[in-house]
Length: 473
Image (cartoon, rainbow, N blue to C red; front, side, top):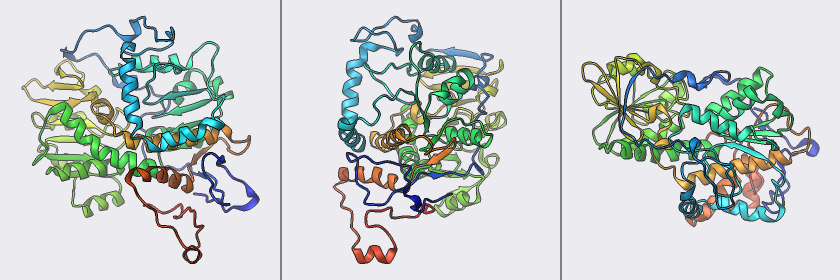
């Protein structure tokens, strides 16, 4: 990883007066090496995730048989029909929900207030594949319970618009970027950059960069400290329990759980389940993460060793086929299976869509898959992300990630030509510190300030950054 040394007076991140003064020190986004190491891509950039879906299974669905949003004619209060949501009549209720959520998003609201005068994204045409909803100003194509076909249709409707072309991409998982590369590659001639916040999406970007196919600069938000340590760790620590409780009404005390992966997401899930009295096992491929699991009091196992006895299986790896049909066949009756990794490929759901197995929809996002001998497993959200499909995500954590994304968009959009090459960049340490500082007033927290003598002793600027880029927190 390269560190900017302050020479030649260059700065990759311009901070306007309305945002904050960072003394005289300037920081460049740190370029991330293209070698990824152990991270695994959940699906190839050229592979459509529709490959994992099949209609071969016998399926009993007790959910409401309602008209698809794609077949409805709806208009918003402005008379526009350039959107597709489940029910636009719920917009007023949704607006109230957003206003309530804004009370828990201090940094994003502070950024909005400071940006009102200068309008740092004036002229930006941003297309986003993320979790967002609005009634006016922003055409939205999304609804809960989308099929795979619906998902790609919604992305295409956002991209393939007559008389409008995006110049920025805000992505979560790389699907939007993948779609434009696949269907509309000429659009990249006018796109200034990509902001990506997920493990899967970032991995895809590094693959493109390594192959020399990344044709615009990209910001890796996922590996910023404020994303890894707060969204991935603290958010999942709360949402795993919420998702399981809402879908299964289960009691956690005494249950045997295996968590596949002990990255930040796995750490959060394990901590929450352990605190509720569950017996937690961990699987890992990385000896460092494995040692951390052991030191935190968890039993490190191979999945095959515990698959017959556990009550819950949770995947948190970002990989594919972590839970295979062989594992599913060996699970005990009523075992709950779910995924907290970003993509839907960690559990081999496609292998369950066969004639000898019966699918029974027992409630929204909950399927019982029944074997010929009567054994059944409880599959949540068809293997998709549990905390987004079956629970709410803490708004305060969203504020942290959304603020980081907004700042990355501002930087890429306003960067002079030549500042960024066709590569993947990390946020600077100073920016992570800035995002964190905007959230501290919520807790009435008071930072200690270094004296001149202390700053000189440590070799730091009094205003930060306070840790070197290699510091792990």
